[in-house]
Length: 95
Figure 1 (cartoon, rainbow, N blue to C red):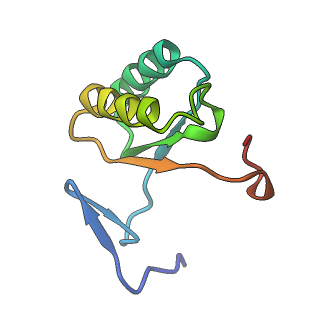
Figure 2: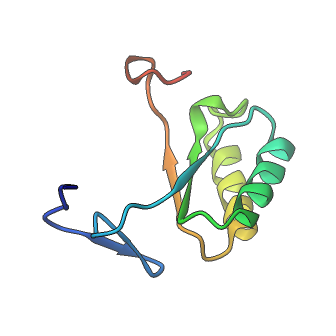
């Protein structure tokens, strides 16, 4: 039996930590154009949410670029929840 979260979180109509398992697809691209295309392709697959692994992005060190890219990603994915993560190399991230 799957353990449930003590405090489920609801985001845009999706319950994270609820009774049903969710599908989260990762976005991992070095170039912005590839990232936006990947987001459109994965959104069309209708997952429950997407995760932008910013550690693989070429502009990861430029905060303004990342924020602009995040806004563009939000436009592409619409109401689909989007998780933003930056795992360190200690967490097997690319940074």
